[in-house]
Image (cartoon, rainbow, N blue to C red):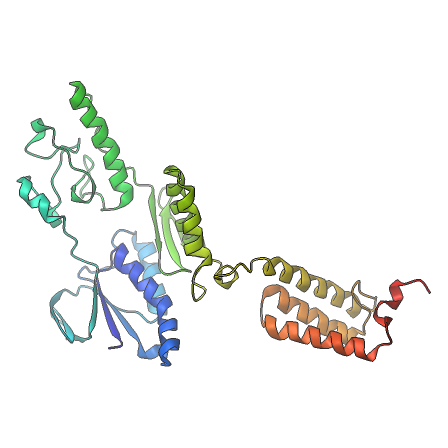
Length: 352
């Protein structure tokens, strides 16, 4: 029951694996088991994973998966699914009760009724103007996931993504208008793919953009959020932008945001971040002054206590052991006030 098999390593399968990597820690903590007891297995029929990326980027993704304990089986076709196992061609079956299927995408069955020539996965064959092959004179156009849209001279159709569907929609709209106007100034389909951004969980991603420039890690994940905001801007939806910010950066459990726990709260605690940075920096500067033998701008202490103050300031500033560091600061302040005469803490700032 702790073995989960994911079939298919396209974008959907790969992003599912990324989400499961993040979820493994939560799952183990919730059920009080070791993370090593949970096994995720990625099964791919092709000899490589994530064929939509170039081999360099796909290699980085594979390393990320393996580094997080994902077992990868390439050149492995699933032949049968049983209630308690998955059978793989030329391999031993995998015992599991959970199979996530992200492969074998096929077009809607309604497309079969049109009588138009179909290609792989049932995608309808089109010419360079996205007219259905064989019935070009009937002004029938195909766009989106049902279209086997192929740029003239290209070896394979474009992937079934929203980016490609929008591009195909523009082409078909123009060409349909030509038919309505009785003109034939058709626009040929060209692949205007601007690249990919794929997120593997909340903290790691891979981008292949700007003429196949490779970007990976935290920056790629930020770029994915940015492209989503570009879409919301395109449709002029301020509400969608607000909802996206709430759902992706603030109302998030388990710190699953690109900014970690600093924004992942259900209540607004963002004001504590600049306050923490200011207080940590103040302690650091004051401790450094006391360490050098000159009175700090907050207090006048010995070099030894100045060293401790400096260390506590660094911890609070970078957010490491913040609770303990803050507690020690409060404790030290109370001891310092208790052992000094009234207002002695401020005596050097007051007139004699």
